Length: 466
Ligand code: FRU
Image (tube, rainbow, N blue to C red; front, side, top):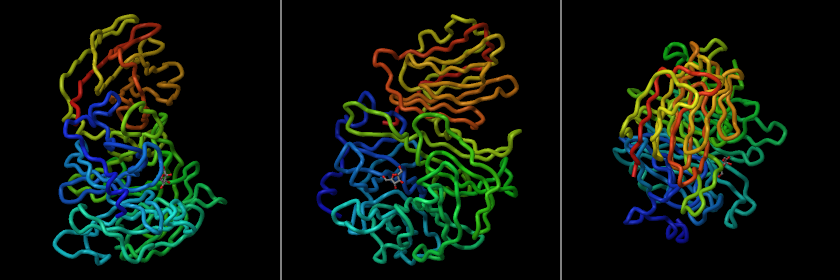
């Protein structure tokens, strides 16, 4: 650990001032200070979720990449720890993943605790210390529940292949008893190419195959999910940073693409999502976090935030099997007051008149009926569904959404600096960084061109996680 980085490790202010600034997200993760981008190394071990994140320990903009680290018991409340991984002679620390080495395949375990192993990109040439070195893949491990970290002495474990090859995502493939790594190749000739590798011990890797995800680059994720909840009917999802994915089969050696690419996100600010490793079988969820990329936070000590955690499922629709993204149910535990309404919504009526606040969850089920458009206005900003076009528009981005049984069903998460919109079935999601006008804390619902039938409208005020 270089002293400059250690000294810069931000400390929580005793008076809590690093949690209540005017644009500080109140239930979306932000580091206390400075720049963050991709979530890294998402893993569950011994009752704790570990959230690592690309972090600049010394600046408000991108640079000096390290892995910041936070832990929490419930995917909502996080405690930021010291930085886990700091730059070394192989490079600054770019994105990657973490796994629990349950069978001690790497041989790092030195006591009763299982080892948590981080697999990351050593970004050679991005610091004076690593000048002239290429991008390679390396390991670090912890035998004390993630409190201290050691780099593996044999780094790198995977040498340079092409360009800025990076962002290893590792999973345990039980059937072949091998670790599998998905890696972005950054090959100039095939810019959408990733590769899969396998290893018995996380240290020696054999290349298996190449996977192309048209339109996608960077930060792969690779996981198996049941279709419609049926454990006997599964598909593998290969995912790229831009929220595009393909579906296929995987036998431990070869990924065969069967369908896609598909898009799951239509908003402005969602990138480099990663799912948690080692979620207990009894839970069984595939939980994803993304960087809410972009956005400005004037005057704030932090820069950038993450999406609210979402659970991923595969479900069959008339057009085929698709990935669905839904906020995790833990959100319910942040509920405070609830306002509910249903009935005929006339143009110019305002049943939510008087609703004010900053943190909301809104669930809406509406039949457009005679309305030409319907929507919500959040702190002055409309989310509008055009019935004829079948599109939902927010902040200059539109998503195609068909009515199901004649109904539009939405779930909307509002925080101090973001809006996330999900169709209730999870087919479509839109994430936005959003800085509302300070003096407008109102919420309203509207119908235009005729009356709509609101079947259910529930608005919850949410508690802050701080
Ligand atoms: C994606 C990305 C990754 C890289 C990291 C560097 O946002 O460009 O490919 O590892 O960010 O911060």
